Image 1 (cartoon, one colour):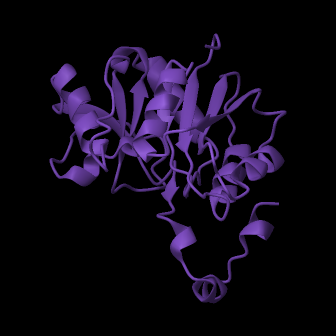
Image 2 (tube, rainbow, N blue to C red):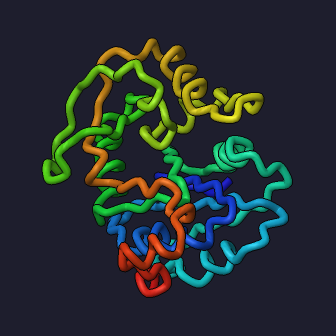
Length: 227
C-alpha cells in the first residue's frame, strides 16, 4: 500500500469505455491543493472494450501520481469493489461509479477539509436532495430508511474504521448490507454529518444504455466532451 494518501476513489468498470470519459475529464478538473489522491480502477480481466485505453489516454498523470488499474478475474461488480477497498491506500475511500462524473471542481477538497475538521467521523453522507449552490453547508441529518440512501456512492468512508466490513458477494446488489453493517458498527443512523450531493457528483445512471438515436437527440458527443 502507498503511504500518505488522503483519499482513494474506487471505480469498478464493466464495458465502461462508452461513458467513463466523462468521469475522467471531471477528475482532471478537480482542484485539491496539497492533498494526495489515489485513483483505483478495477476492470474485468477479459475486458473487450477499450476502457483501459481510455483511462490511460485521458487521465492527467501530472495531477494524479497514484493511478492503479487492476484486472479482476471475478467480474461481479461488488467483488471488484471489494478488491478496490482491500487495495486502497487512502485514509478515506469513495466509491465512484464509472457512469458518474463530478460537477464541482472542489469536490475532493470539500470532502477532505470536512474530515480534517471532523477526524472522528466514520462516514460523510452525500445528500440525495440538496441545494447545489449551498457549497459550504455541512449539517447533521437523520439518514432515511429507504434502501436508495444506502448506496455506497452516497458516502465517503474512513477506511480504517470500516476495514473489517466486506461486501456480501452472495447478493447481486450489496450496497444496503454493506452500509447497514457500517451503521451497526457505529450505532448509526442517528444524526450524521452530510454535505450536498449535487455539488460533488451528477450521477450518470448508465448512459451507455441509451441508443445512438437518443445520443443524437441529446446532442452529446462523448469523445468531444472528453478531449
